[in-house]
Length: 263
Image 1 (tube, rainbow, N blue to C red):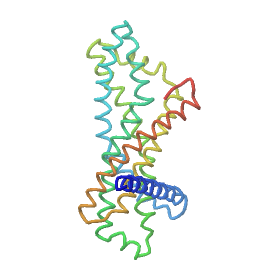
Image 2 (image 1 turned 180 degrees about the horizontal axis):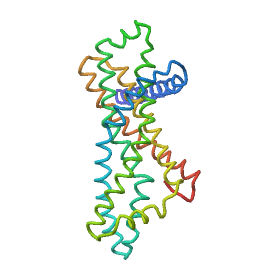
Image 3 (image 1 turned 180 degrees about the vertical axis):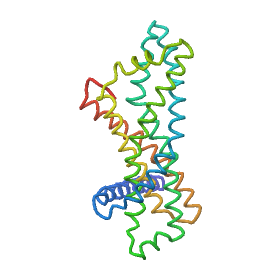
Image 4 (image 1 turned 90 degrees about the vertical axis):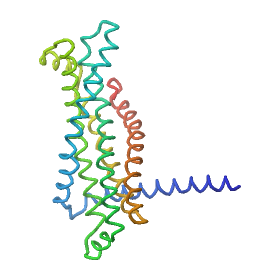
């Protein structure tokens, strides 16, 4: 009975967490359409989440492009299809590798920062001070971060896709001496807007999940500095898990609307 009680308690606790998180995210979406819009805060967070994440995204994208090019060459060379390396790399990056990798990287960099920052404000009672001064802390701290992250994710994803293609070109031209003009012509030969647009727009959902989870865990932080560290860690873990799970659902949705163009 004790084991059953513990399992039942864990299940109920998990369901309570999911419900509270869903309510928090839904409230953030509704609040985003209500004034005041806090444009200054949104722009500031866009700089933090987007511009300051660019070095990580570009470096990672370039490295992934190089690695994918080497692996793709090793595979296609068996069938004498080395000419398909640029197209295969570009399709793989744009449809899935770029968006998912960008989401996981941003969840590690941005999610941890949001969870720690808001958590520190909670335990030091800065959130209570904002509310005492008639400032909507939820709108000012959480909603602005959610909006900024949703805007930044597609832009960072496009940068990662481009950096990956450049990395693939670097690896390919080092091996075969292929010109940049021929490489990019072959890269975009099989790419269409139906490949780029759905795969890029699904990262808006990733951005929403990252900022919502981190903000929620920050707002519910307790137990002082220990709780701040736990909120930061849990933000990364929970956001990464939700990104992977949501990616499965979003890919199925894209399959439904674009049955001939898998994402």
